[in-house]
Image 1 (cartoon, rainbow, N blue to C red):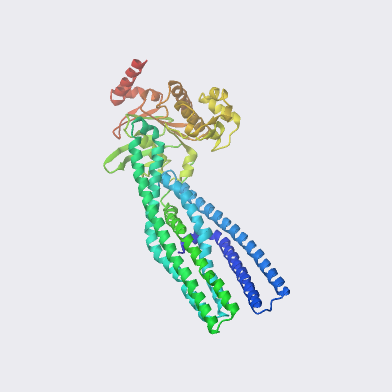
Image 2: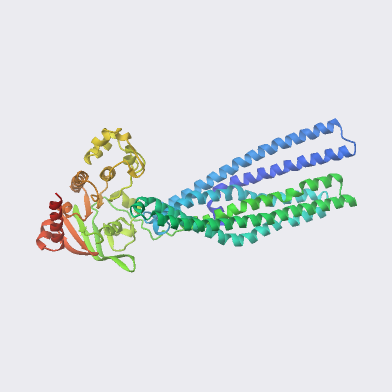
Length: 570
């Protein structure tokens, strides 16, 4: 089992593997010298020719052999570690670079949970393949040939018999491999399915508890876990059976070789030294192959993971754009845009609009397609009907695009760490700049009463309110200083104080930047230069607040309904 593609990807690792094999071979030579010294000394003892000088010389040779063998084993272990570290580093960098290259819509090709499993557990399995299995594969060829050449000096018949039995072990491995490849593919599929379900249920645990569906999801996870247990047990059974076969071949071959050596000694064709050497070293013919077999199944697991890793690395990104934007006005033009997540449900229908003015609002009821439109502009989904500076959106380089566009959603990602980490992880800003941003979103007072910029924030911002998280996210967006800000329901599901603070900042940004405000709250867009009204995926009205009110259409109807509701709630 030798993967040329993997070796090509890990060419930097090969020098470590070669050195590891050389030190393994040197260790074998030391073992041969050690065994030969014992055989000679025993021969001298039997024939009463052993002297103190012989004993002293033999002990010195044995001591030197043991020292060199110890050094060789240590160096072998060091190079195994280096090859493993290099493998993990190389593959994770390649995987990470590919995900960066794909950009924001990487989930079209691979789920996040599968990506995490492959980049951690999958690559760890490949570590075994590179640091243990592959060196052992080369050594398993080199060791029997070395022993065969030395055994020839004593008896050609025993040497050939032992050498003939050695290939039976890799033959059994090849036979097992045909069954193992399919089984291990099922293993990884079951493993990633279990991981997907666990991650999803963990993230939605609060929702499951609210609707008392946690028991149902637990049953589903139990079924998936049972499927994973069954396929894992089949893998273990396969491993046990193959190891038993390899043991039979190894011990059987060593027994036949030893018997031939004793028979040769009885017939007088082999010396006592040769007979003892063949008996003591016969199993050494098979130990390398036997060890290779023990690594084989873990390596096969890694190979199954490598196929999935290379499937991601081989994703064709040639259709992704490489055009860049200039620093002039970021005019956005959309012409006859249609979009569907699936063929049975069309989200946007023949949408055409131009965003050239400073402050643009996109409004409509929930499900009208507002957020989908924002995600299409951001490039989350490919489209050929959106132009920015007269360049098709899918022809733009995502990295360059992100330098100009800032997307602020209603569900911000707040990272575990302190406030400074959450504001400063993209660009380095001074403490004064950080405090100025917090002051604009009216969070400076709160954090000054805590530990300032060193205030610790828990995972996902669980120790902050929804409004505080949204305002912290807005402060982060302000520091980024993009050219176009897209606010997608940025004021939904938060307290009144936070909503007022965020809207005030949005209006301030709109004076100097291009702002697209997507909301179902029509009172938030009254100051917009242009408002587009979406209804069931179509633009039904366009104008500013005053002109839309005068049309007495959908916008005016929704505005009156919301105004009456706000008066009632007050």
